[in-house]
Image (tube, rainbow, N blue to C red; front, side, top):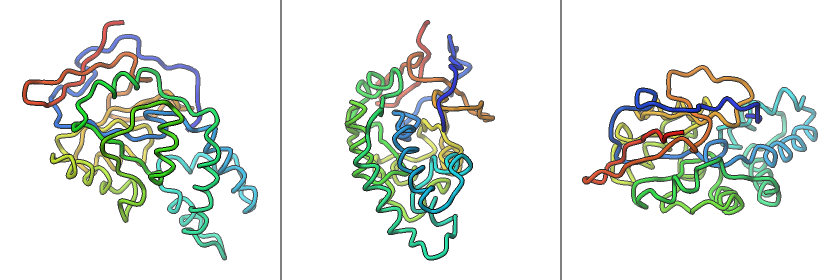
Length: 234
């Protein structure tokens, strides 16, 4: 998704957020904890031009899904989706200029118990680690990446696997997402969702709580280790 004019939530109230405790927080990566839109769209634009695609029409379709699935659904004759996805990943590994953390997310993630959160991304692991490092964010103790599941978002597999590896149930997790495919995956897994909107070019119609970034968000760690999302005054 492309960046837009701010749609900032100035003051959250408890009623805007899920009113329950969670076993863990699960974070999508691109558009949710960092913005790699400019870098990704540079690479995908070059790829689209090489294959005779209309760039402006094609680019909105790339976000929130694994590269191999983006290529596969095009059904281009003579194109091997696995090989093309690997080549795209190599280009993306070389182009991390302009990758930035979403406002407030560094302190939000860094203060979470290490065994109570994970990054769940459609990107390959090596690319995800490179982008997280480029954004200056803490590396997660657990990451579920493209190669860890057979079915990517919007299938729920990635969030279910993350919860399982953390030793909890997906239905007891809160997912932070930005893209429709990821939101659908979280819903299918039975998790609650908070939508991060800072990279949205247009308002996203959703039944879930939506905030621009993490500047207005905090959390409490309960005595039993569960987490509660809380609004910060501002």
